[in-house]
Length: 116
Image 1 (cartoon, rainbow, N blue to C red):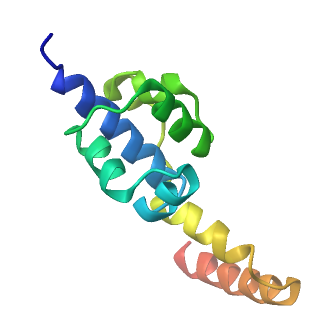
Image 2 (tube, rainbow, N blue to C red):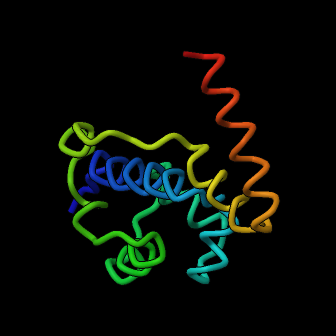
């Protein structure tokens, strides 16, 4: 039975998109799912076929469902994609004290006023 490399590539593209939306590196996702970085990279590039159980594990680690990995990317392209900086900023904010957050809020307000 011939491989459908297009299907593998679509799954890989969806996986990479979700991983980046969540702000994970390949290494972080590999560690969370106990999958080698090399295998995960192959899955994302569509050069290796992942078992369904592996795709389920990856989807769960990304807070998604399996459908989001299997649906063609054109169907999910209509959703607004968050900036890759959203997750990075949320991660940094979680490490700040309340005083630091208050100071940052003041800086952001000033920046927003200058822009407008």
